Image (cartoon, rainbow, N blue to C red; front, side):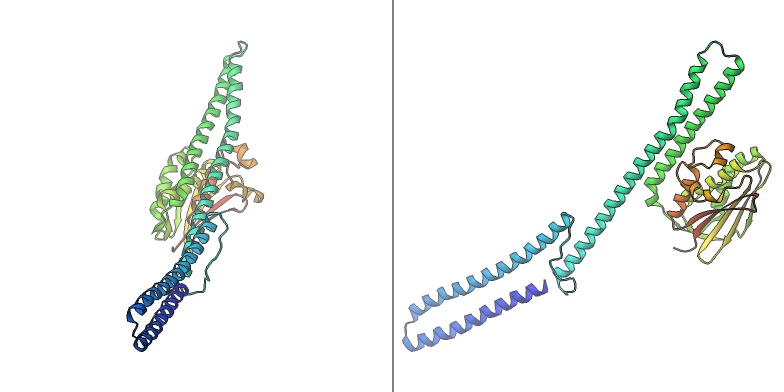
Length: 342
């Protein structure tokens, strides 16, 4: 508003100058002619004309400025921002325009994020419905087989086993879907802070220990145990558990699952190594996609393909990353990287 203020001050100065000159002229004429009453009336009317003109000019200037402000705001509402004031001008209006422009882009980015999140949830629901249809169809088909009187007890038992496995698969879908939706809403609320990683690793190991024991897998922990990293404890523990669960599920029985921790300059690294079928290199990027299951995985164990997807989303959401590589053709190494500093 600096330029407008200068213009208003100039109008007032000119008006004051005209008024002073007029006063001197009328005093001179009155002194020469002695017509004081008439000149006083004329002088009063002249004053009204001068200040009415000044008021009109200032009012017009203010209305023009407010019109530009209104146009600037309306253009942002319409989605086509127009700059009415110079961004380089050191004035209140220039600063106001810059600040409201920043607010416009902040609100738009929030709107875009909301739209993206909505699209992701819609895509997730569509994927889930597609994935759920298969076990539901299988259950319906095998239930119809049970109505046949020609089936033996052994065949009925086998069919019941198939139905039970399909129901279990639906349970995995429900659990995975719940976690995914919860993650989608909480991913922007992750609260990473610098803290030791050992307690988080031990908690994840406790969760998988019973399943590992049933498989004959011993969880072996090694490496630096005094590392601190920046991460959200609750969600990162969930990510590591999913990786450990994957290692136990697809690893060889009676073989160890190894956890190794190491500190780098920028990242803390947690390796989870198992022995079993090697993941093909062409699947390295695909296995982190939602609902993706490699051919080898599908042949070995039932699953829904959400565990590694959730793990990757959690780790990348905190500025880290996740990768996989083979271990000399005898197993796989999943490496989880967490930032060392904020």
